[in-house]
Length: 132
Image 1 (tube, rainbow, N blue to C red):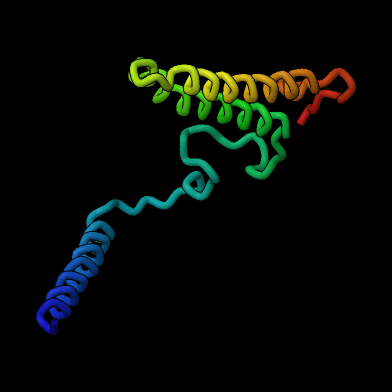
Image 2 (cartoon, one colour):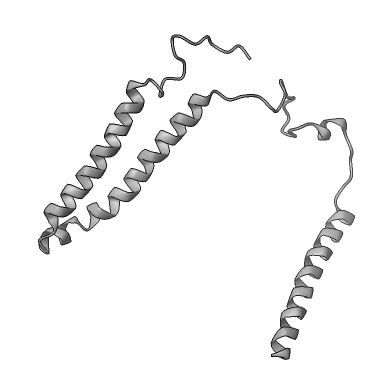
């Protein structure tokens, strides 16, 4: 027991020592050229044109969630479609078809609801366009 605990302690110390040595060596070797541009939010060659904190259109999140729901639908439908022949061979094809059809219909109703509410539109006709 003590040997196992001792080896765990040695390996933990070696891991921490390796990380500390790698960071220290990198600090000694890398060039240090401080510039004002390095203190900017992004160091990608472009100067920022506005503050980093700004509001996204909430419709972006709705569209992203609808995409995720439809993506998960495909992820859950694919395994059933791959084994559907086996279900038919064992006599469970009708049940599998009804279950997957109910699943797809339920998600299609959800998509129709979101579409009818016009939540998939980027800009509603009754809301002004943001200039920011």
